[in-house]
Length: 249
Image 1: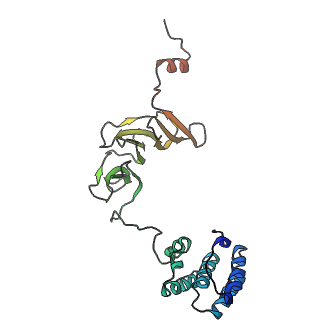
Image 2 (image 1 turned 180 degrees about the vertical axis):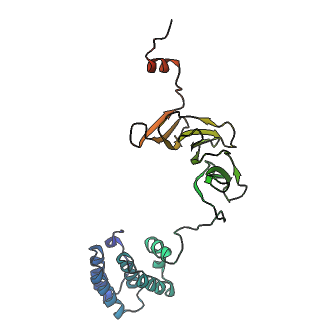
Image 3 (image 1 turned 30 degrees about the vertical axis):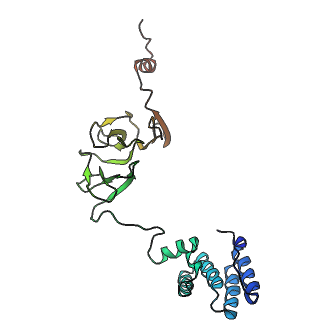
């Protein structure tokens, strides 16, 4: 909530006391008393946009949506600058079926599309779709154009995201009968498996410098967060240690 006491608008002496009293009750979340105070101010000055503003805000926080919209309409009729208040606009927008920011639909179909993620340059969006029978990874222009499938197999793939340079896409695939982390070039070529573990591995994401991938895995009995370092590939020394074998000289 905003700190109402810091807001300073010019008020006539006739309603100053009512407004201050209402603001105090609003801060205390005593909404019925706040409404009474702001209504008293409006009885004295029916066109007070300050009183209408606080009354609308009180109704919104109180969950009385119809009354809140009615008070907001009065602010619009008065062409009050208080109708531009960020908190008020955000709450009322949702009540009338609008988003807080301009929003447009990129796809119109009957299938399931999800898990969208922008490329670093903002020109492409990678996403998951089951339009071809199972969940696969697709890419499209940021305006929804040029939709192309990047993975083609009978398994499901989820959670794609771009590398910081936009040249690779990391994702989860079940193609080897287990949820594992894979990476591919941004055009879908050079698909490679990065985890080989009987436990599930999901939700991969590159580090800002592209040298690490963070993901979740249940390999230790519960879902936990792990990081793999792409600059430190496992070699024969690590395998020998795991096997308890001493490397020959």
